[in-house]
Image 1 (cartoon, rainbow, N blue to C red):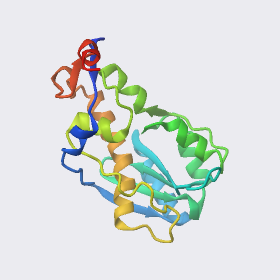
Image 2 (spheres, rainbow, N blue to C red):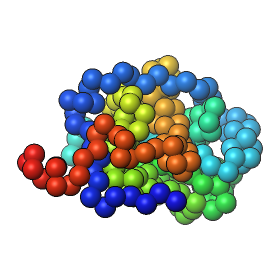
Image 3 (cartoon, rainbow, N blue to C red):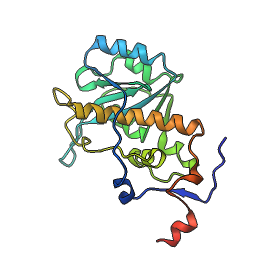
Length: 216
């Protein structure tokens, strides 16, 4: 069990982040746009003990405007399933999967996802781990997926597709890769930290809290 140095602080600046190579999504993508595909996907996912999780919602550009979750990403190590909720909704089988405490789902800022999901479905999500909390004992102070991934793996996740229309009739290859990567990255981060492969004191972005205060 890793025992952190309580004085250790790991954080990456925007300038440091911008210099890193861009991560390319390495696994497969399956679009889930009908009930039959959803059932097949959930059978595969239910055989996993841990999956990555994320959602995408059509951006709102007017004050007070909100949209329901358009896309839910559930990722194994080699494939990400993109559930197009704006087309198929949350089925009873998907609800059961999200409420199954025996399958661990790894996400980031998951309460934001839960609140968004509750606008369209009464789902009581269980078995979730929030990376924003999980990384803290390792001295990682940043809370965005992009920065956490960069600190651990030295690569940058592009956010160029974030504000695109997730309710579009067809998702572009760029949208699909972006959405899949976020869920896949959550799983990869969790596995890497849990395995003890990350050594905080050796991080190029590590400093003591006193050093951080001196630079302010």
